[in-house]
Amino acid sequence: MILNVQQQVHAHVANAIRTRLGVADVPPFAVEVPPNRALGDLAVTVAFQLARSLRKAPKAIAQELAGYTLGGADLLRRAMGKKKPEEMAKQREIFVGGATARGVDWSSEASQETRFEQLARIIDRGEPFTLNDLGCGYGALFDYLAARFRDFAYRGVDVSEPMIRAAAERHPGEARAAFSVGARCPGTADFSVASGIFNVRLNADPTLWGRHVEETLDHLHAVSVHGFAFNSLTSYSDADKMRPDLYYADPCRLFDHCKRRYSRRVALLHDYGLWEFTILVRKAP
Image 1 (tube, rainbow, N blue to C red):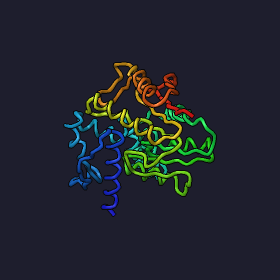
Image 2: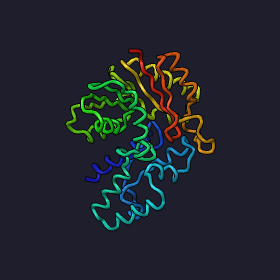
Image 3: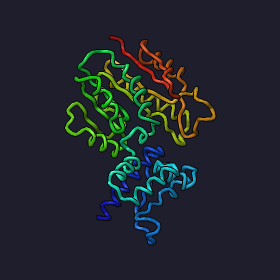
Image 4: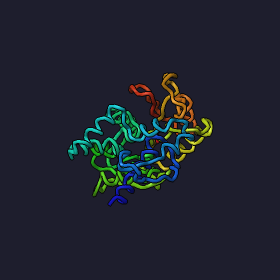
């Protein structure tokens, strides 16, 4: 039984490293039973392994992985002490985090819906339609579309296997949705979208990351029949709030790139209250 729990903890921590810290190559680590039970039931030392590469204190890394403030951690401690199933269920959702907006590094459900509203503007034709979602996470965009459309086919793709598993588990028996692991869309669709996949560059050279963005846009163009949409953090963000591990694109430069390379029908949306922008590329009818 303890081995099964260790495996589950290992999977959740590995997923948090990818989604919350933006580390694609998770180093090998173990989930062990500490020699002193006063230290807890299980122990993970991966924060120490990541400290040098991320240039952060192990304590700070551990707090980011768990997604807890000091006050939140105290609530978890109390819930564990009371052993109330309903309280533990709430805390488990916070800790696992993967199938929530914050778990995929968005600030809130409300901002996520605002973001989806901009991306969905690319759908300018009636039903039925097909859509690729590159970097789909746990499939939240499908939920947004399902509340507004009936006749469509959605294909979600993500590099994170745990995220794809979470997406499939959240949509059992849903004939309109398909999820697969990968870095590219497996086929063409009427429309394609990419949300948040350009934001975390870690230590990558900004110039090289910019090329990666353009190569991904080439791919979205190639697999989209009628058009595609994507978003990015904006270079117009307040300087004191910018993080060195994130990529802030120049919206004017990408607008010009899309206009010259893909279509004359390009729209830049930069007025919806978030520190980002969305570009819609509509192909000629």
